[in-house]
Amino acid sequence: MKRTLMPMKRFKSLSGRSKLLLGGLAVLALLVTAFVYVEVTQSRDELLGSVRAEALLLMETLNRGSEITITAGRELDQALIDRMLLSARLLDARDEARPMSQSRLAAEARELGLALAMFFDGSGAAGSTSAPRKSAVDVDAAHPIMKEVLTPVLDGSYVWTADSRIHCPWTDDTLFVLAHARGNRDGAVLLGLSSSELLELRKRLGIGKLVQDIGDTPDIAYVLLQDSLGILTASRGIQEMSAIDEDPFLQQAMETDSAYTRIREYDGGRVFEAVRRLSFPDGTTMLSRIGLSLVRVRAIQQRSMRRTILIAIGFFVTAAILLVLLLTRQRFATLAAEHRRVTTYTGLVLDNIADAVVASDAQGTITVFNEAAVALLGVDADAATGRAYDTIVPDDALLLRRTREHGEPIGFEEVSRTNAEGEQRQLVVSTSIIRGDDGAVETMVAIARDFTEQRRAQAQLQRRDRLTAMGELAGGIAHEIRNPLNAISIIAQRFRAEFTPREDLEEFETLTETVRTEVQRVNGIITQFLEFARPT
Image (cartoon, rainbow, N blue to C red; front, side, top):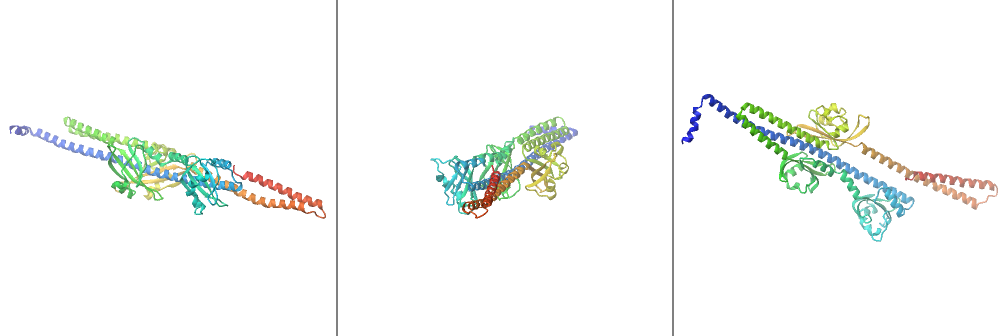
């Protein structure tokens, strides 16, 4: 009992000033404790807010890059089909003019970059083929493999059909096969491209490469695209993830176009996950998911907590006011360092993306300007960041001004722009808007890709197609002219051989010889014209 009363006696024995000082220290201690708690909480919220903004920016970049990549892949597939259609019509015309042997058809197929070329008659019987006939693999024995593609064309259901699941017995390779109806006779022309070559091309240009490149960035735990059936493509090391129909959070994200975020357990740790639906014009939908590791954020929070406690102890030893000032200064320094780290980290990710990425705030001030944008617009990143978008891109080539004025994102739109060298460039631009929890616009992002070279290649291909068509038309006209010339020549020969005039015999022979000679001369000119018009 005496031990319990001793502290109270000692407290009563203190002077009023000491009591006031002790009370002030106690109050200050409570204030410092409350300040530490609020500061740590706000720091955590600000760090998570920075991670959320970073995740949403990466999500927008991934989604727009995926849309551009998938669109480019579809255009590539269509270009391959157009090329095979043109090759089929060309081979059909050449075979009609002069039936092709196996060696000639094989040479024509190699020249056109085809792995297989075959002709079939109206009953489906195989004719000429570019593949050598072998005892082990016969053309007629391999015919049932092609039946699925040939039948609609031979039945007249379609002018042409295509399939990518055909196995070629001569090359032991899976082919992308197209069957096209013959022009002036019953039957079909069947062409094949090597699927292994197409697969290698898609690996270099496909969406999987984009996901791998983003997923290889440090502090990104995973990047993946999935639909209701499973994972479509993912970064390295991803073997299994939660299915959409088993996760209410993913189901909610799949139903709207808004981005959703959460903190979840992954691979023995915690990650900050951003999820957003990705929709395409053909109705295809998938879910893009990006997981950012929270290891560094948690380490920063732990280090910050330890420093705060040590500073608080030192504050009680020295002075309360000095402790508050020192703590505040150190906290701001920590947040500034973290902000610089997050900014640098995001910049490294954006600078390694091939597309130009430019972001501005709601007032039109540029906040993000990656290296691809520097190369595309010819403006230094340091000179552009922090300045008004309208002064850096006055012609609104990236469509951010229109997005800000209308308040709506812009899908894929082609924009023509003249660069500093006076060269006309074709850009494909899309914009998106990042909104805050209150619905207000926070950030506008523009992604642009230079499609000038692709457009030039497409124009050259179209010009070549027109020239080929003109050559075929000229050849047809020349043939039509040659037929009446042959008839004239035959008539002149018959006149000379079967008729003998009663008078002016010499003049008759001179005239018939002149007709025959002139017909031969015109026929020679037509032959030279056909050789000139025939494609090499």
